[in-house]
Length: 591
Image (tube, rainbow, N blue to C red; front, top):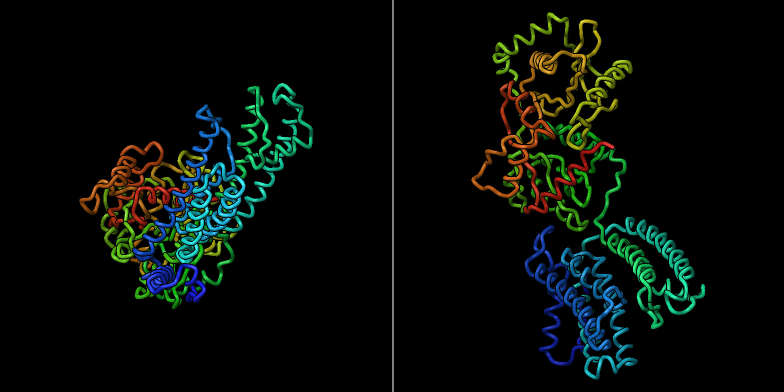
């Protein structure tokens, strides 16, 4: 929190009540407690203030570069300039421009660097104005420091507006990499200056001079070499590129979003399981607990939470919030504040329309990504008498095939055979393991699941389904359905029929058959037809060569399920939706 200005501060800006009133007004506007009218959302005045500061810094960088180019034109009397000549003022100007874009994201590190860079620029402007007044002129030697001083004042007064963190550990790693690149650049520069002869620079370069010229890449001194041959110019340009790349890599990493390092979540996972037992909400709730690639966030009461994974600066929340629904609004606000401070883009993956109003009131847009097939087991008992299912049952029974259910724990020989079936299944085109909101073959995972096994006439296992634990008493869910290449066609259907018969006999009422990606996108819920909707429809219509969208839909549609839409909730915009999909694709990869 800011302290109230003392009278000494006011004296700096002159005497008089009008000046003091203006100063206090600005200071009150910049207090952190006035910056947010909601925990996670900046007020309009704050957004305007941060944008003003950001654009001021950006304009200041443009002005520095323009001033450098104009002075070079005057010095060269309009003759052709060496456009590849890189100087400290040019780098400073580019730095201010880059910092301006980061200040729009309200990055604290950007504010800190901008303040330090402005302070250094002020010192240099004062020194240049005193030593090189013939270049700046009588007016310029006072105007430049004054403008820089005003920039420093604006940055200092608005310090409470910039709160977004950056990943320090990433920056530390980048510094080591940059230091290694600088060492390589130094050795490269020393060798190049030493090996190039007098014809290239018109004078012999000693090792001491070579070291000096290598270190002084950006014209810190007036003694820089002039290249007279093509290879000498190429050498100097390559040396500059290596040095600038190292500086740029370190600079960009200094402003990276916070990266999450997964730690033990045993306690949080147990708390999540207890809340899901008390407040079951979704058939896919188990995937908030598995795979173990998620962190957990709970509201201040501990009665509601989220399971999320962060990758590429995007916080991917698995499904809807869980826990007591009366806390969901405050939960989302607190989580969005966490995302804002850590520079993450919040998103909710595979959510139902049940909480549409909750997401939309918090500024999220819901984009339909497919439909989930939920089977009414009682109603299917009539449908399974259909000719298609009767033929499958009769055919596999005559071939000696059977289905049995095994409860955990499972012995190692059984899991070893399932591993063989799974590995063979994965060798087929378009098949790969996926995580995050799906399971993958893992012995620890399968030990938690009842297994539905397909056995051939020789009793050898030819396929399996794992039944995923659910928190809804009368509902069931499954994840992996895999058959070996030796099993006859339609083995998936026979195995599924066996699983359905077992679940119905156990008194369960519904079975989640899983998501059909992009199903139903050609019939959107609203009349709005956005670019994203059109793109998804195009992928669904033409993407079967990469993934059998229509084949998966046909397989599940045979069972006549209820189709429930599923969405991705994200802060609106094509760019943000693309970021979410890219991050989701990365999060689903099984390492």
